[in-house]
Image (cartoon, rainbow over all chains, first blue to last red; front, side, top):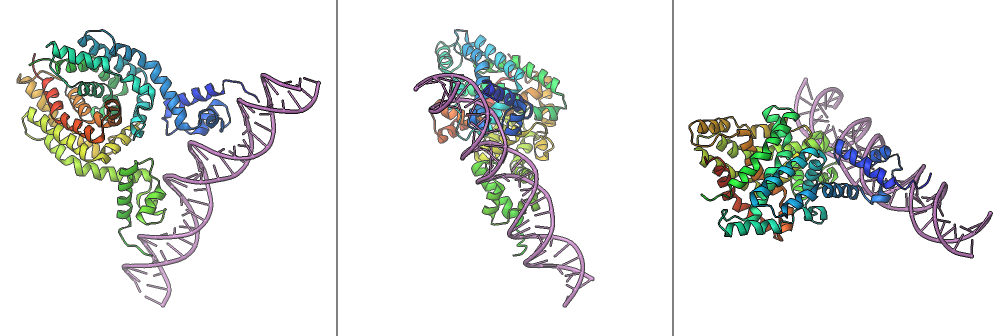
Length: 202
Length: 202
DNA sequence: CATTGTTTTAAACGCTGTTTAAAACGATTT
DNA sequence: AAATCGTTTTAAACAGCGTTTAAAACAATG
């Protein structure tokens, strides 16, 4: 046999599919090789390690999905509308990409250090423009003074954590996966209101 | 050599220490055996599997820490005070037990199914009394009508998720571990206020 | 004192991710 | 056209993992 030149892509595609199906840890390199129809050693030849292959897949996936989030965060949108759009798009994104959720969980689980060395992530959370907006609006008296870091952490928590505890919520409330997805949909309206409420004067 | 009768405990202790230090996945059974000063096979003899040993350690850890949380949630405390205490104690608990955070992350990461089959967790989130309180207070007009499930998920998200993204927050804000812990401490006041705000009429 | 059931041991099993060294191949140079 | 060179593919092995096995060592019992 010879080059065929799409070997790398075949590995990438097979791994993506298997990682989605069964999770990263439960997918073996031999399985990937079989599915891709290539020799076992080629995975290491092209990606150096399984970890590296995972990183490549994750980075591509984040890049594909994060552009809109970054655009919204750095747009000139009025604050409340920006929060609404950001939450809405983010929740939709996680809803439509279970793989993304699994990957994020895997990353968070692993990360004793290696987080922002993944460029895909550090770009995703470049919040300078948003931070400035929060401070400016507070100066103008339009909203309450708030710590931008806390606010952003609040926002991410309310958006992402429910996906992490999906099984817990399903078990506790005796609901199906479909019903859970409805529950998540409800949050697209609820979470922005809660965040905006927290910025109001009282 | 002979029974020594604390072999099981020695395994348990060594594993707990190593799991805390390096995480479950990065700790091998051979390492546990060495640290405990026992034969490799004894881990399987006493705990059947590494997964089972993990479950045993996790269950004990949760039991030790969750009593107070359950007590608060089912107490007769007035709603606002209950929220304040719950958040305060929960955050303190996670702050003082990094092992607990790692374990929860590991569990969430694994869980494609097996969540509430861990009794320790299902007890932890028995929220009937709390749910009733939210509904009653709304009927009395003291708070806004709210979906108790959403509210509880909000609460857990704001409490727990920041621990999960610890490295991300540290990297992004260029802060040390100590400064991160201060950031977490600030949330003990912030999070309850946000939750209580979300219950106010407007 | 022999027997029984429990605990410990050394060795192996089947799996994992990864490395090795040689083979096969395509393209380039002579 | 043949030889050379760098790339790609292969089969085989390696070291590590969690786990199992079967025999040995031991403590308690009849």
